[in-house]
Image (tube, rainbow, N blue to C red; front, side, top):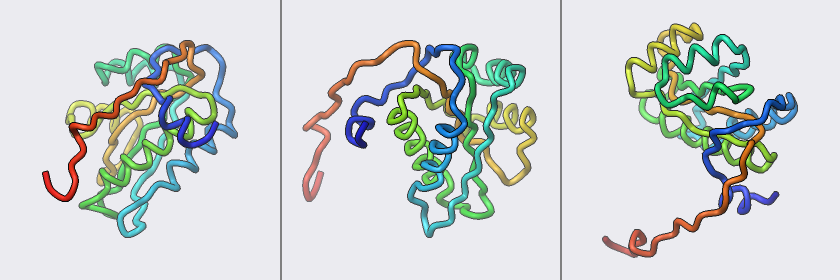
Length: 167
């Protein structure tokens, strides 16, 4: 699948098959995240891959919108190191997340982006569960697996949101 097709057909997938995610696909997805643009090339991201069923179940108790983890074979928790990039870690991690979502789609996998930061209860719950050290902020969770449903392409382009040279 080419990049534009992956971009235009990526959707949040909340139902997964029981098929495991291939380790080489997971590595490709993590590499895609690490190849995201980064302010001053600081690359403040770290990733916690969670496949332990007890921990996935615990995340569902911490994050109120994570019920799809009951089916997903794994999740990637994207964290930002605020000591490396105190001002732009959120933007850098968001770019890494988007790269990972698109790479997953290109590989035929499904994902959904679950926000963690800045919800303090979610941040502290994930920090405690996964042993994330101080100074590292859990930003988001990516549920990942083989989609049990296929989402259609949706045209979201709106000319009313495009301005030229001024508002």
